[in-house]
Image (cartoon, rainbow, N blue to C red):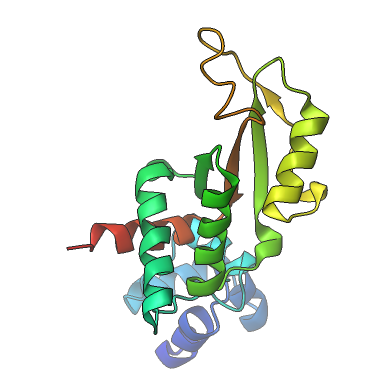
Length: 196
């Protein structure tokens, strides 16, 4: 028999998996699952378990509320930018697309200042029409966003409808800013949802 306190501590407090608990207690995983059910300790989903395994110190971000008017403007701007330009549906992580480097820099500032993300986890994907040099676009975006080229995926060539309408606005293509974290996207979307 496994005591409820011991099982709660291992599974909930220490966030150990069923397999890890079985090894620690020298019993089968079936036995651990039996006692979890018996004590009505809710099991984590596979995706939650994987998330906790990959982030043993908890979420790699935390929300900080703005304290000054200037911070409040950036905070509101960041939420507004994601509301208008960010991906809100689907199972993927946080992503926002635009052709304006200043806009994307402001959004990255929002992530850095209020969600305390590790900027080294950001990734970038450049999408360009066929008549733009991939190398030129990569150098431009790397410089404008102030990120080393290693953070960028190879530029993707996209088909363009019509001639010339994109020339000025997207002369270096568009960029998708990624952070592969579903909970971060959910947090941002929840903040947007609660705007009154």
